[in-house]
Image 1 (cartoon, rainbow, N blue to C red):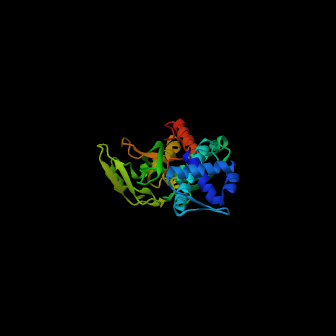
Image 2 (cartoon, rainbow, N blue to C red; image 1 turned 135 degrees about the vertical axis):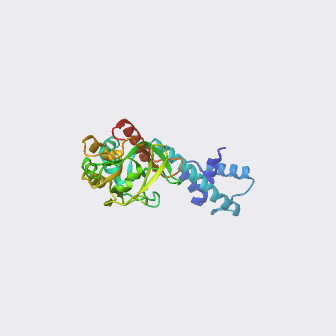
Image 3 (cartoon, one colour; image 1 turned 90 degrees about the vertical axis):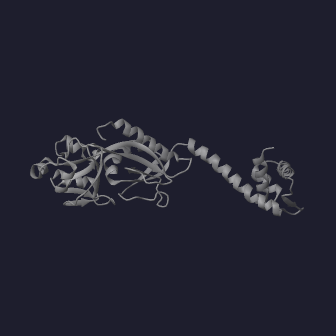
Length: 301
């Protein structure tokens, strides 16, 4: 006889306080419930229920078994619900944390396309440049750029983006163009103020040597678009991802500061809570972004 069926019959008898009500709850006959419980007791070699003409109650062993049995039955129910959820259409509120620059420039333009494809999903996108705690702060997922910190979160790489140092033609006419990394010490650099290492640029020399540049400038700001605007205005050299400066470079508003320097690349990742089960709405959005950004080609990245 099926163990889960026996276990469910026994647990329901305890919950309902008797065989008659348990039979009604389970939608089977009273004799069938009694048969399941008797089979369970015979298999275990223990009496689980005290039976009187007025009431049924668990024995000491039966009460201990009930606690474990109820956990098993709850887990089995959750497993069934998991399969149902995985096969159901994605729906519900999707709460996302996204770095401001990436959200404004790349996510916002494509979210409408996603929502039209999944009309039962609603999105709450929070733009900020701080590291959020997904689970404790109630986020379903986040989009993060660069090296990921060690954590228990799951991650899927969506694409790569590149970073370059850029400045305006007018700036280079006024202050000259740096020819090598050490020359940056004599230039005005524009920094992110929201990052712990925002004033430090990690660069690679033509030889492959990893270098760090720390130089103060005229401006630090917590928004990449503002840094790009400052660079276009001739205020200094900014170190930005290509999705921010690509249009300005095509228009001739900015140029690469040190041509020929190895290009730095950073990954773009979707991170989400651990576990073998990924919510359909999260999985749908990550799949959408992976395909959407793959189709965008190198012009953005």
